[in-house]
Length: 97
Image (cartoon, rainbow, N blue to C red; front, side, top):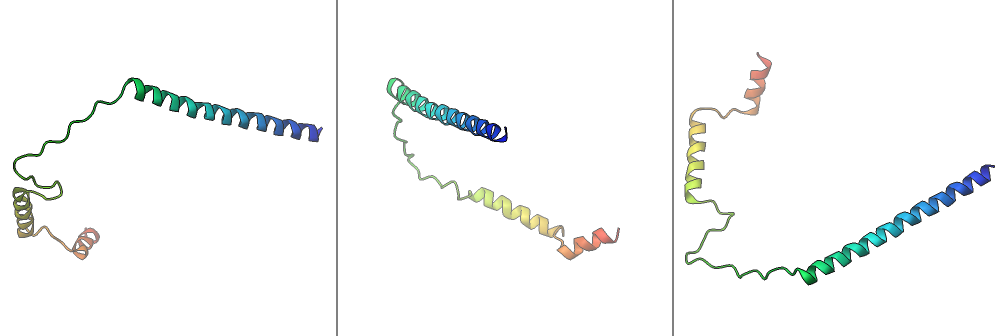
């Protein structure tokens, strides 16, 4: 009886795995077919070439001079107020409460 039960389990395993493989294969083909259908009957509109501006623009990585001045001013004010503390100062404040 144990051998019969084992063979039934293996048979169920093969049928189950086979069903999953067949379903996934059909799903891949159906997705490809739908993709081809959409590309054929609903093509993307050609994109226009990007226009170049008359003046050269700064790259997004380069901050503007106004931003740099604001950052420098904020750092200067922060340091003037004495808010910069070393790690040992903050540790001493926490332990001597």
